[in-house]
Length: 147
Figure 1 (cartoon, rainbow, N blue to C red):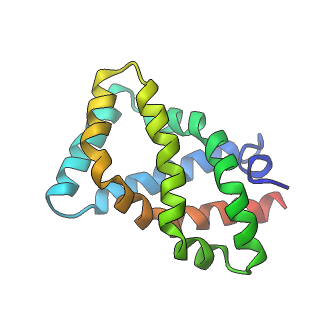
Figure 2 (spheres, helix red, strand yellow; figure 1 turned 90 degrees about the horizontal axis):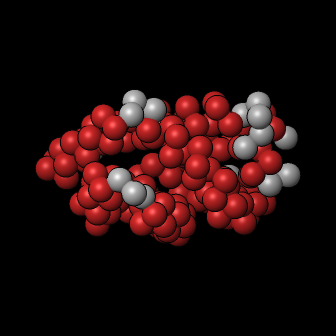
Figure 3 (tube, rainbow, N blue to C red; figure 1 turned 180 degrees about the vertical axis):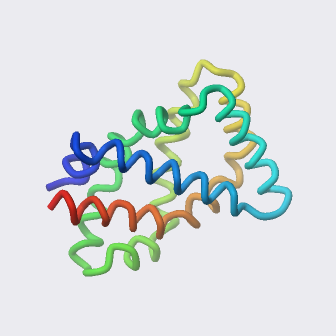
């Protein structure tokens, strides 16, 4: 069973998206320094567009994310510890995720979204890498349920 089957199933998708929004909220809140302030301001701006904006974007991105991560997820499961395996490869995982969000940002018709993304993109990889262990834990939670 692939990640798409698990994460996008009718019984899981709303909870997966909710958990991922919670992860993003946690990551943004914990972002330190001036970069963290910029991230918090941009995130607040995007959430000001629509309270559930991030959730809606995640619903759109999750199919592509599932497909992109599926081969790495299979390798991680075969190696026994998905969190450890994918955390060790967090740079590669982050690159896969950022390629998807880069394409989404390019296609956005909202100037405010494009502007916020462009300002944050140079530091985004670090933030994404820091969230990989928690993201893998979320995936693992639903793969156990969906299996």
